[in-house]
Every structure is written in C-alpha cells, then in structure tokens.
Image (cartoon, rainbow, N blue to C red; front, side, top):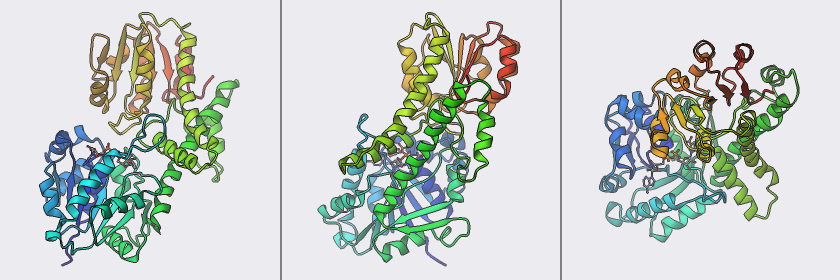
Amino acid sequence: MKKPMKLLYIGAGYVGTCSAAVSASSGHDVLVYDIDEKKISMLSSGDRDQIEACLFEEGLSDLLVRNQERIKFTLDYRKVVDFLDTCDAIFMCLPTPEIGETGESDLRYYNEAAQQLAENLAKRTAGTQEKYIVIINKSTVPIDMVDKTSEILESMGVKNFGVVSNPEFLVEGKAIQASIKPDRIVVGAWTQKDFEIMRKVYERFYNSPQTKYIEINPKEAAASKLLANYILFNKLAVCFDVVGRTCESFENLQFENVRNALVADPRIGSWGLYNSLYAGGSCLIKDARSLSHQLKYKNQNTTLVDEVYLSNKRQLNNFLSRIDQIIDSNWSNKKVTILGTAFKRDTNDIRNSASIEIMKYLENKSISQINIYDPAGMDNFKKMFGESEKVKYHHHEFEAIKNSDIIIIATDWPQFRGLADVIISELSSKPLIADGRRMLQHRYQDLKDAGFKVIAVGSR
Ligand SMILES: NC(=O)c1ccc[n+]([C@@H]2O[C@H](COP(=O)([O-])OP(=O)(O)OC[C@H]3O[C@@H](n4cnc5c(N)ncnc54)[C@H](O)[C@@H]3O)[C@@H](O)[C@H]2O)c1
C-alpha cells in the first residue's frame, strides 16, 4: 500500500482549512497549525455546528468530521516541530492584507510564520535535514515572493528544500465543492523534483479530465493569481459602472434584459454581469491594490488598474447618495434595516462587505435605530459593531424589516428574493426599499404600485 504524504498547513483560515480538508480527503496525513486558540478548538471539535460557526462553508464540516483520523489541528508548535522530521510539504496559508490603502502587502504574518518555520526546519532530524521538503506559497503574495521565501529559509541555514507557488483560486461559498472538482490547479516551481512532489500532493487531480493542471514557474504562478483577480474585478467594475450606470440613466432599460442580450455573446461571457452595490471580500480589492503597487514600483502607468478599485468605491457612494437624495438628507430619527452582512451569499465572511461601509456611513447620521439580519454573518458583524439600543440584531428577515423607514438589501442571500409579498402586505408605513443586489427586481413594479419608493442598482 502506498504511504500517505505528510502535509503541514500553517494558517487555518478559509484557505488553509478548506485546502487541508480536501488534502485529508485525498488520503494524506494532515496537520494544521494556527495561533488562534478559539479557531483551533472549534475546528477540531468534531462538532458540525461548532465548525460551521467558525467557518461557514458548505461541505466543510462533513469533510472534517469524516476525515478526523487524517486531519489534526494544533495550537502547539511542539507538535509542528515533531511533524517536520517526516513532513513532505508545507502550505503557507497566512493572511496578506494590504497596508492601509497603499496596496503594499502586509507580509508581517507571513514573515513571522516563515521565520519560526525556518528556525525549526534547520533543526529537523537532529540538524541533518536529510529529508527534502517543499514550502508552498498558497497565500496570495507579491510576484517575487519566491525569492524572499528562499532568502528567509537560507538565512536560517535551511537546506534540502524547494519553494513552490500554488495560488488558491477558491471561491468562498463554494470552496469545498470547487476544491473537490477544481477547474484548474496552478503549480509554479523551478525544478522537476518540486513538480513531481506536487503531482503526488495532487495525484487525485493530476491527469484528471475535469481539471487543468498547469505547471509554470513560481513567479508566473503568483502573477497569474493577481492578474486573474484583477480581470474578474474589472468585469464587475464594467458591469457596475458602465452597464449598470447606462441602465440607471435612460428610461425603459431593464438591466436583466440588457444583460441577457450581452451574455448571448460567448466572447463577453456571463460571469460578473450582475449588478451589486459593492464588490467586497478579502481578495479582489486587496489583490488589485497589490498589483497596482507592484507595477508602480516598476514605474508602470497604473491608471486602468486603479480605476477598477475607484469605480467600486464610486458604486457604493452612488447608491448611498441616491438614498440620501430621496430622503432629502433627512436621516434624523430614521430606522434603517440592513439585510445581509456577509460580503456575499453562502459565507459568514464579512471582510470588506458593503454593510461595513454602510455602517460607517450611518455612524455620522442622526438615525435612531439600525436593524440587522444575516443568516450566517451576524456573529462576525457583532464582533465589529457590537449590540446596543441603537444597533439591533434579528433572527429573521421579517423581524428585521418590521420597524423600518429604509430597508437596504446588501447581500444576495436567496431568501431575500421572496420578500416583496411580506413588504407589501405587512409594512403599512411604506419604508423606502434600497435594493443593492436587484433581489426584488421581478417585483419592483408591484412594490411601486403598492406605494413604495424603490431604489436599485441598475435601475432609474
Ligand atoms: N479567502 C479567500 O477566498 C481566498 C482565496 C484565494 C486566496 N486567498 C489568500 O489566501 C491567504 C489566506 O487567506 P484566508 O482567507 O484563508 O485568511 P484568514 O484570515 O481566513 O486565515 C489566515 C489564518 O492565519 C492565521 N495566522 C496568522 N499568523 C499566523 C502564524 N504566525 N502562524 C500560524 N497561523 C497564523 C490566522 O490566525 C488565520 O486563522 C491570503 O493571502 C488570501 O489573499 C484567500
């Protein structure tokens, strides 16, 4: 029988945990290390509810519970040190946020983890470092990071190693499904030896007819991740700021009808042609900013790269100022409901979500109450904004909209699509409906006929 590979994951976030879970289900022996005590305790609990409360990803809790024997989580670095002697590959899954709004990647977490790892790698197998090992950058990192990782390792005396770039292309909300049947795996390495180790890691997908297995060099791999995210962000920006804005500017242009005519052209394609008040999440904004920062450093013109980021901001400001206009800037004593705190449906991730920006906007207004509902992301939101007389959380969308002057739909949770009947029959006070996701687009006319004012992205 073939021996399983021994894989170490550093960082148990969305990327580290989902990727580790799929590796365990592929038959590998996996150890996941993180410094966050609560996270480690919840993820290793073997309890589906606790796992989902920590990381809400469809299929993740099943995979972790089913593969409990093959995947262990730890907070104890001594267990990592023991594991290193026999370990085949180490995945670096650390956060790489941007520093302020500069676009520069904050590599603090990565560097700290790499430094600690290097110190201990140099001591493995009683300092002989007999076993060859690969260190894999799964975090989204600057294009020349492979050189920096090698420098850190060499500076601590680490030998017998390779550095690989294996960017993660997962889509939150579909992370497990997409990792079990990935459309592509990109492996960037300098040597055949490293490619061969990675083929074993991904044996399940190598030569699979469903997965494009792409082998390039580590800088090309890192660049392809940043560029892929920029292109996707660019498509959204075109949809928001050009297609949507056109529909908002002329009479009798229904966004969905225009969209259908556009996506019929396969060169245009359908992805990204939906309208939203903001493209949030942990990646698109950060990665476009990082690409811009790196290009500026190479003295390149970054107008087009930067404009995508700016147009996303413009989209949200435009939406909020339409609300402001319709209420004559009179926010005094208004009750506002925010439906959706997650940056998109099917996740509890609130990083860069539209609702965070809406909360910041509302902070300066003299409103009396903010009602909030989200089926998955409320706990994370509560940690950020707290709960008070003014900021109230509800267990159901019907409860949240009951007592409201303005209802803002900020996340595309499918259940919000069915809200029109309740709004029409129950809300006699006729709150303003501000639909930032076009969830009620099939009922705008009914809402207007019933006396409601409606503002929507992509509608006049
Ligand atoms: N979330 C996504 O959809 C996604 C998709 C593709 C790529 N990425 C990239 O992957 C990387 C990780 O993203 P994420 O969303 O998983 O981040 P995350 O914030 O969810 O997880 C990162 C984890 O690293 C841990 N950590 C920090 N310092 C540590 C240390 N010294 N040792 C061990 N653990 C440490 C944190 O506690 C946290 O649990 C980023 O570079 C991101 O850009 C993310």
